[in-house]
Length: 261
Image 1 (cartoon, rainbow, N blue to C red):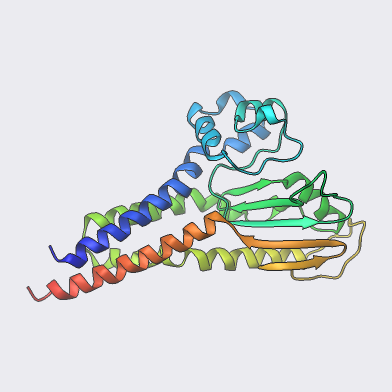
Image 2 (image 1 turned 180 degrees about the vertical axis):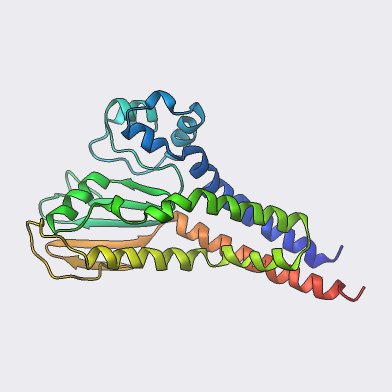
């Protein structure tokens, strides 16, 4: 076997592990769990979903209203009506600071974390702030993305498995899809920020002109200071993209080198 075939399989294998562990596995196993909680169908939540959530939430941000004894325990979080986010790795983090949210009570401001399949952090508090300035609640945006997320990630996972197992030009081209993940996320994230900032409602107690929220860096909205930065999930997406690109080029090189044999 040509050495570049081996390199391609190694690169793709590493990308597959990161994609599966950070995104596909937690998203698929936790899929629809929050809906069951909202609908009062807690008894229908699978033990696997509970274990996965408890594992993936180790070390994650917890709402200031969450009792410490409920940390990393989904069942206790449900019992205490605490803020519950999704299980997958967060990709982007946004936080707000304002005089009416003192550091003593909110040491990290009002942080919200964006995932492929939803949100985590101070989502309720952020929606309250959004309402104050006439913005829709966060769940209004990204319905389509959240709906197809589990299936899209499963599709990418299968592509990587087939890429490792078989040598095909089509599979090679399909490996360029995960290369685009970081860019696709930023484009989608930017679109929804624009949509929220330019579709303000009359219910806002504080009237502001349509605006573009800060995509990356620090900004200002009314009396709120905003911070918007990538977090661990985005860096993992970049790693997946780079490994997928290396796998693509390695496989291309190997297929060209062996095509005449």
